[in-house]
Image: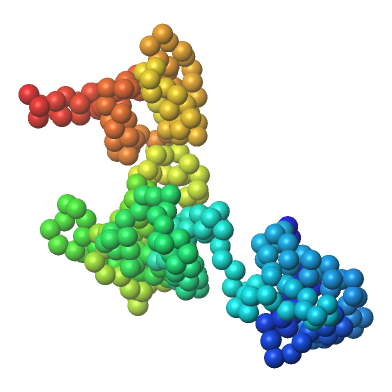
Length: 338
């Protein structure tokens, strides 16, 4: 149940009083302490009624807030904790609390590479310690597909800040095809993650109509701010719209989308109907041995790889050029097993 700020101040004040065992606390004493605390923190001058403090004690004793405070009355007059070590500020976590916090920690840890989230790092460590201490290092039941050892992750935050503050970059970059790194003048626009890898999207060079390029951060050797070139802002390409038309990161602003048509076997159809290839996907035909699906995207290598990952469980029906490319790649792969 929600707790308002005034009630929380009263609970903590009562807790502080009852932990002080060098003094005997009567009901008037607790009322006075709560009234003073509310005046100090909230500027409330009217004080607290006896009925309110009595209700607070009952609430602290109950399970409603998870306190279960062992408040007892001694000599029918003085309030204290039966357990001298008890405090509401050092409560144990319930099993449900442990599970919830553990999974939240797992998710928050994915953002540790960004300074934007650096303030969370200490909190994450404290939460992990608390959970591990009370749960005896209980394993998480969420396993996110991340690779913390991926090369280049140390550049993520620098690239992020460069985009936010619009800084042109001087990048040493080695593509898979190049024998050695080359220098690139680069204007970053977007960070994008796909299939466990991070990419920075931007314009290369200093020409007004420089093409959009996609750099894998694990291929970056070094990066710094350009000392001789101003940042060239993206004013022509709607990146959100562009990436809504593709699977993966290989997007071409000048490329048209095409209607991809595939047959999916009866066994796998439910899976692809609930986890579609693309948000434009729809079922257009139902057959005895499966269904036919359509979705509209740009044709690229990521699309081909995704289709090939289903092996003999799907068939590409169109467009013809995509069907031919998949056919050739399957035949080439077959040669290795002859």
